[in-house]
Image (cartoon, rainbow, N blue to C red):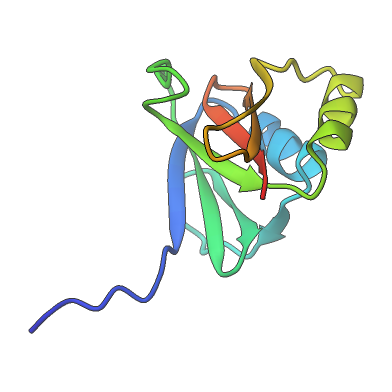
Length: 124
């Protein structure tokens, strides 16, 4: 029997403070909150659209997402990258890699979440 993947479901990341991460992903980036089962550990689920979620899992100890933006990142598509940049800067979110065109012409920039995960914002 061959496996038939129906689609991408979620991406889980370890975070040092769920409340700080909710403030970033929900309050700043605008991802909707999803209902989460009552696990025996702290976390949150956020809606990325199209049936895809990001799962935040609180972890004590060192979080090490510092492999660089090329090796470890996830991306969110936005309507207007320049307006997004202006908004992020107004909220005190630094731009790690400024807006530039990929070789295919699509614009992209990178920011980091409170634990240092690289987040690409792309205008497609």
